[in-house]
Length: 470
Ligand code: ASP
Ligand code: MG
Image: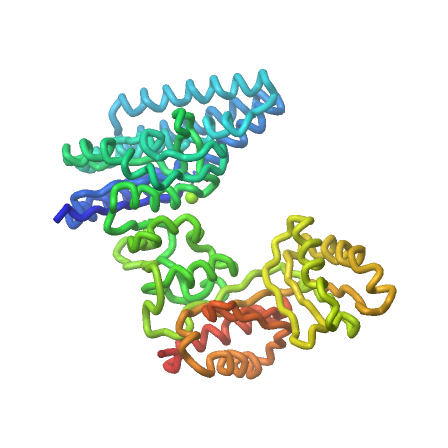
């Protein structure tokens, strides 16, 4: 049997300072004992991508002072890490080379006063291209033989600069000859997150926050057995610990559960980014760099992963609930289609929809920042129906919060919604509107701003109660 392979990904905070880098190197060293064949994927040092892009914006404006500041800050972040870690002079030389490249790119942008998406990617990619040098340096220092590897050598993408998509079908074949010699030498490849290249070899990026995506792609590319994403929390929590002090970390979640949670406001990995692993049945773990002994959360392809009925509760704040209603809507076709066409034309994303079966109202929740505009747009669209009194009014209720309960177990259990609404009733929470996902994996409700915390806490009490078992 082929040797088992692990991919570990460290984000910007986990490689952002000399202390974090030492911690990272220790974790990799420890994991290598069990997983001698491992690859590491890293982000730019925390804040560096933002600095690179801020410098570009300054160059476009011709603000040469700010450009110089950005170059100095970026250079200092890396040079300080090199000094603090006592790394080889070659690492310093490599960084100096990238800084020269950065200065040249900024100079070109300053002259042109514009940066194409392709130029933006050339600049943004430098953060990861530098961080692999630093990370490999710290690993070598800790006795781990590491090899910095730019993903542009195998991670083929389309040419949609700044938000490129990987060409998954071709990547494993390209990765094999790149990784095989590194593994054969007993070294750990340290791969740039966030970046890839077109078939012409031009550097692309996968979009902001793209290094989780890179980790999943590398996992598939080298046929890894597991992918571990290190962040700064103990995996995925049952609720936001700032709202619920006794929130706890979840041992496991299904892909559908994590997708619903991400959509409904939880700060977890973006579902799109982990899809490559899920599709190929590669378990993906979310772990804490600052608490490496904690097991974290594993995300699995399907179904019931524990005996809990409900797993988590999330909240999205700052919503406006828009209602189109009127006795004359009954049976008029196309009201819903026109409503959503208006919202789509405004490029507003709708967070939740409900329609009463009486067909006398359609409710949709939108981010508060677009509430007024959506209301005005709908009033214009339905002017005639409003004049004829088929539609009474377009109402907008501000300061709403969507609270969502997530769990695959709800599909198989009766009475879950009964339990949820009894608990909310008992705490005097007023539920304004309710929607159930068609997957039956989530129930969402709209409550007023002041009811958010009591609602989330009441539902969380159900999650930790003894009755929450299948
Ligand atoms: N460095 C990139 C960013 O800040 C990618 C990442 O960190 O995931 O967006
Ligand atoms: Mg990140």
